[in-house]
Image 1 (cartoon, rainbow, N blue to C red):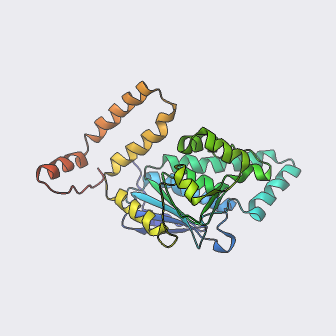
Image 2: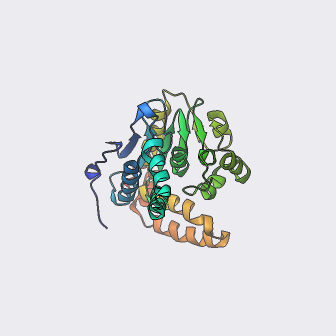
Image 3: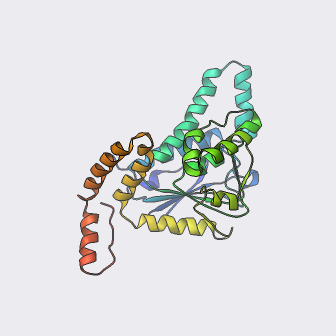
Length: 276
């Protein structure tokens, strides 16, 4: 398999840092609440796609700079041009954009590393989608999450929201958020299961990073199999899922990490996983 050096990933539109086998992606436009641009969508999609071939990164943290996560697509750099595309009849470019945004969610789900989102302040529109597409979400009580597409005349069906969000918080709750576009408070997000945990604003990034570090020190191949199963088994029957998991578990039982865990148990030690 192709192996990519994590240091070769050098995005220009967001910050990319590496420490202790954890990569941190920071949306870094705090003066505008970290809105997304065409370039950011493109580089985020390509970064998550490349992570499939970066074995040195075992977990990813996704966060925003300053006191906000992400306010969605930039009004002037994305929304304005899309309106002009419509007025000029450039429908193919509109579709190319919506497909690219969907590809970003696909690559986040397809990368084998668990993605942990650290969310504070505003998390709206496409920003809420990025949080939704992450595997784990740590938020703050003061954060506000909104899938506000209907408020700008668009469908709530954006970037997989109608498929993924109901599986996280339930159909009725997802329908309410996607129809109304209203903001969900941090406490509500935790109560509804969107957030795994609510922590203080000054601790949310460190807590998310600590979780990512814990996952990075675990059995990497097994985590990748878990993520694959969580995503693939939506479309399987229970019997099919059981059969698929039998194959996945048999593969995990052939790894050295499985043998290391056994030997550590026998010796009454804590296993040290090496990811294979």
